[in-house]
Image 1 (cartoon, rainbow, N blue to C red):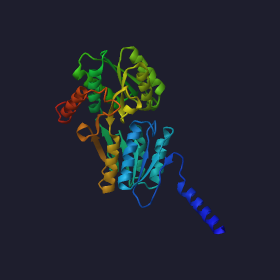
Image 2 (cartoon, rainbow, N blue to C red):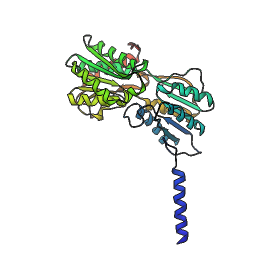
Image 3 (spheres, rainbow, N blue to C red):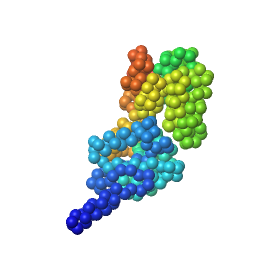
Image 4 (tube, one colour):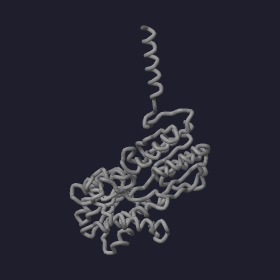
Length: 334
């Protein structure tokens, strides 16, 4: 009996030691595996959009290659650098920052840890061989959903709501507007941004307020590129009986009957490919740009929006996508 009690105490202590982790981190480690850490952008895991797409790529790589995967969710702006340094201190093989807001933090930390590999999604860092910049031609995917929005609109007015105003989100608006005007030159396009700071990506109350304003001006299809701020946009569209377009991940399931489609930005594929190169020993720093022709952008069609996104709308978007991929249509970025 005493031997059994001692054995149970030993197992319990081992479980506590193995399960411990510092605040903000999740995941298990093994010294035998390549270790990959991911630090999320504002909004964090569970945003059903940008961060979740990156996380899917990490999990796919974990399942296929047996890597050790650890995630870190920052609370404040300063936590981005702290999260990166914590993973680098622990000798991770690859540390990924999800979002352009990591640009300066990764530049600093990668300089201090030249033997660690880093990757940044949506940021461009030049002249560092240990940093891979994963960027997208978002305007190409937005061109497709812009065309679909314009053709679907009954009022002749469509809307766009962005998160933090800046060059990246402006590309979404530019592509969306160009696609809409390409198929319907008389379409009217309303646009607003939720703010000028990173919190603009996590303010659903503001998103709903802006969407209601656009609906009041006649918009019957609204595309958001605003992180969890977009949850408010989708809620307003559902309440008022108009259509919304999701972003980054397939968000059609969030409001069936309201979601016309989602502009999918396959961050998951870019993350997976980067980890695969690490596993194969072929990781290279520098710029990696993804577009329609690489299969990293597109629109979503599933059981949640099949009744809304008609075969004609799909055919138009598919034809435009083929023209863009072949270089016969150049989508403006600014």
